[in-house]
Image: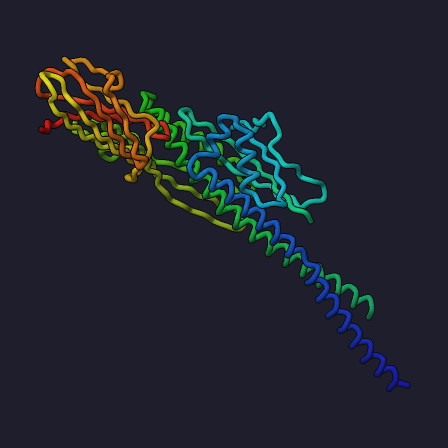
Length: 139
Length: 241
């Protein structure tokens, strides 16, 4: 009888190891890192877009003029197909400036990243804005 | 035995999850810091440009420092993971005074320039950034003028103007040429013979005929570049046959 009990212990130990290994494998596969990578790409793309528009002062100029149509056209052209956006402009006191929606419609159940970009316009008095660009792709 | 196994599983799974999440957050934060620094740097350049445009049309020289302090204060409150600090020093070494230089000479060379040094620092949980950088915004141009006497005091005058931004050829928003006639300045574009050629590379050629007594033909050229920065220069035209 003592011999049989010992064998059961060994089987139990093997099963435990198998279960533990399976759980670890599953945890790695279900890790949220893959989703974060996608969000990182979207954040980087959004920042690079804003930086390239701001490089020659174009971004600040459009915001200063309140030229929301041209701004939306630029975002529609420069962002890849399948990426939704919502763009909001805040003034130096962090109050919203754009009186019309600058968006192509972010749908519910999408991965959304939010990018905040400080922008200075090269006008005579100097106007400063906080730009918030929300980007989303389908899950 | 089974209970121990379950507890071990939960602990290991949680540890692995925290490790993965922490690792991805480090990546995101590093990207955010780099992009934030770049945005602040670009903004500093635009602030200097705007202030220089203001000063070049007669604005107070103190606006450069005042606007940069406003920019530092604005950006200082925008980064959520730490406190960014932006300090600036305006160049005061000759030929700059309080960060600006307006040199509108009679030798055919005009320059409007601003120079500021910055020290940006940001410390937070993950990163420690210290970035010194300089912003130099300069609009300059060179004017050359020649004239040919056509009849009596009537002269054909050709003025060539080369506009530069930071030493590179740049476009002008507006170019105005004046000539001196008996002590007073007259606009060249009022002459019926006036012609203006834009070569598209920062070079402009203005030609006109004017009745100017004497041998001295002085012209003054006033330029606004596309950034709104004003610069002017005078030159005495040389006679050609």
